[in-house]
Length: 183
Image 1: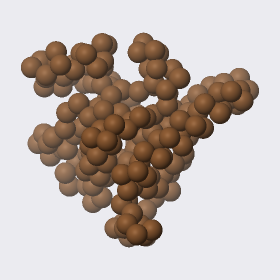
Image 2 (image 1 turned 90 degrees about the vertical axis):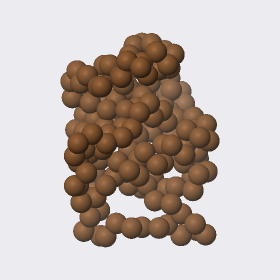
Image 3 (image 1 turned 45 degrees about the vertical axis):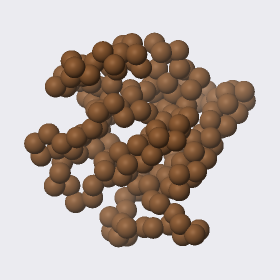
Image 4 (image 1 turned 135 degrees about the vertical axis):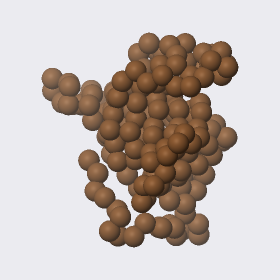
């Protein structure tokens, strides 16, 4: 049982919502990871023409198994009625939002270097399991949450457009008409 408190983000790969309560039987084990009891819930209709949530769950599962450094953890996943869902770590503001809210709309040199290194580490981990992100942009990188003392940690999000590469070739299964430009 998930109690939805409010919608946080509406995105191409489904809708992300803040999730305040997890199934009570699982909640005790989850509290160790997130003392606040807040999680992100991403939902996608099972009849969607392009199923990006399945790819996202698959890639995140592989990253979790390999100890990825800059990725949300999957706390729960499944199907409810006509919807697939995934419950994962709730993160902070995107780099795009942080830059826009800054008076100078810039990062300091030290901050930019730290952020840049962590962004590259995230891509290195993703490439290490054989995937290309294909939608790298400031809106798909976030900081951690202040209440968890993660303001200096960078996360990468949105793996729905990822594709596996083998022998220097990328397996692109989307037709040109299905590829959308994102911000």
